Image (cartoon, rainbow, N blue to C red; front, side):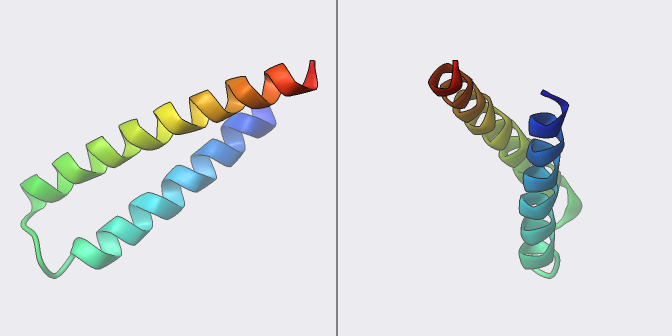
Length: 59
């Protein structure tokens, strides 16, 4: 279980890094923070669904 959370954290960090890198020169801080919050929420929801699906297939 800890491994899955670790992998999820890595994926979130990569996506956030990409968003920050792309948006850095184009946006002010406030919309950037909103985009980051939305991205983290979406990724966590998707990874949660994938983890549930994966654990059901294994059991």
